Length: 300
Image (cartoon, rainbow, N blue to C red; front, side, top):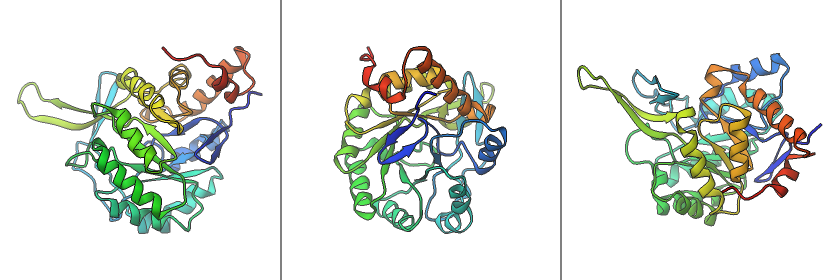
């Protein structure tokens, strides 16, 4: 058996595949368990906010060529109900749990991190990159990114994983700011801003974030840039739908990969990707993922 274990920001994972925040729920996890297939290396929750959020009015989703535009708006129950009703279920699956949090100010991120301090979670994802809640994306500003990471770092000893937006000129500068202020890992990248317009009326149908295979080559380039800018681990994501997609991100320097939109069409896709990575490593003479990482050639 090929050893797929990964040590990421102090979190030991059985394999390098995790779900993207907001694309994998408790019921999806149950489906995977019932199928008896490989489970993700860690579980990542939907982003939690301080107060309950109804989210944006519909339409919230629209398929487009090789992709999906979402305008969900971080709908969720708020931190109090999450802790009371949901977290124990996530922890019951027996895998590392990373809780994604989102806010508008450093103080909100600090509060959320403090609320999670006495739980048994394995890490916190700082979502500073959601493009569909209105206003400016926090993660486009290196200074504000630094302030949020610095403040949250002081508020918790848990591993901090910072999720970046691709909607910037220099993503490496944002990644460096997060690393400098105490981030333990980077997630790259969130969705690309996108929209559709009714060609007959000129009305905007939806304006939000584009995900899915359409963004994969662009996301891969962003991950390649981040991996060469920081020394901390990077979780690569953006349009991954197969083992071959995941391998491209691993070649680019990512320590792990996150799968998002593909989960909606196939709840078993992460298991298939894990199996595919293991098969490729075995066929190419690697006994472990770490061995591959040590021997892999520079991505050009």
